[in-house]
Image (cartoon, rainbow, N blue to C red; front, side, top):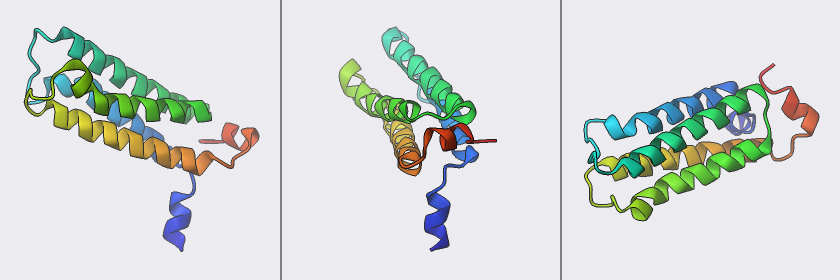
Length: 129
């Protein structure tokens, strides 16, 4: 029963993990399997998603709001869909990085949203203090 209670409270380490995921997403085009330089739109999309995930996680750390978690859910889903939208589904391992990192962002954001669903605005303001 104590494990369930551990997962039912929003912790600051979750926000730090979100920030780490944002950095990893932004750097993912330069992982060992480089993306084709002609695909600058893929790189721009990846950096933008990474910066937004990092920013939302940082906002959660400082001023927790539900819309930040919803934004991370949307960004995680977008990162998972990006290989299909931008046509790099067959371009090596980058799609697996984006599926994995997008899935992790999605799971973490869903967990945080579930943890904070019943909190009042005052309780959310006290997060991290």
